[in-house]
Image 1 (cartoon, helix red, strand yellow):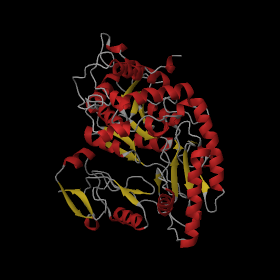
Image 2 (tube, rainbow, N blue to C red):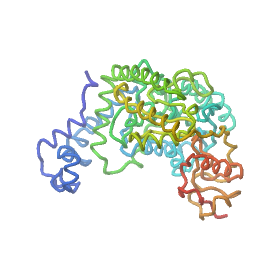
Image 3 (cartoon, rainbow, N blue to C red):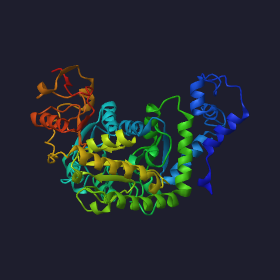
Image 4 (tube, rainbow, N blue to C red):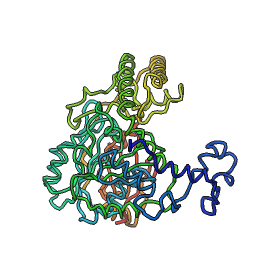
Length: 490
């Protein structure tokens, strides 16, 4: 079976087993030069496989297209159903940077879902693209952001006739999956490609029990953060070019990837992509079926704890939720009489439980491919039960009602122009009317309230301050205390 191969990993093993003369970097020389503490922590074998780029028989050879590195990327493209796939060793963030740089060859204007990852905003800064942001749907009960609707995308594209692409996110942090097929139809009808940040959905292609993946729905470019669910090493990802047309130039995208990638890629990260692809392609259906089944049981156990509910496919049909990915276990804590912030802290202090995300109304646990949740979930259930008892002992707290974020301020400059403009630091309370040079996103719901180039308004500043006062957090601020903010010198 073709997908049962790991050509890149095999080439690393063959090189290490030959014990060649290593008159090249890295300085630890496959282990002997490493600090003993590192050797003891990670083992001699891993260090022996830390092999640089430019080695004959690994990523260099008489036929460049047939070296193990390129074979591994082609296997990934076949596994995910892409025309071409690029391994990334600077995470999905690097993929978003490359996407923006590639799109900038086609024009300046782009329609962007407002709750994109911060790396997409960084990509706008690097590329100089001028975004028209379109808001996702906000859940009025849970106070979290879902996906973009086809109607919202169509309206945004109609209002931005010079747009050269539409950039969307699906699934969200909370497991909501967009109607990607309908979004593709809207984008293509307007003559632009659909770019899908599917960082949280790289596993969906490999299970019939999960929502349909973006490439299968016709997305033109898809970002897969393989380490999140499929299990490669942290900081590794894959960028896919869809097989449905020529709306994004393959050569330009390839050049953009080359521009942002390091000239010293880590072989361990690349090998982990090779092996994660094999596991998903060969065993993904079986492994994911086990995980989904065990998560069904775990949801029932958590739902039986007083004051807790667990999100599942019952939310499908809400605005911005076309389908639901069950590998995100989202616990609705509103009935417990404490915020998600407090519950997460209690779980960490009492049981050393570290959650993926928590906000005012929910806490989020993530499960990986092949994880038997009935076993690993025991600690989660026990920690939630203990947190519930402690809240009962220490006292419940009134939960503030969810307030929908105010409209974001007017865009005065592109993100790039704002980022590169002369800047100064001013008191947060005195920033009204100034142009921001950094992003500010209050959690919940996680939709950026301020982006570089937008003028700060009093309602926005008050909303962010109120969120922090109620235990929320703000992502993106250079001043973590939020007593100051960076603005353009005008």
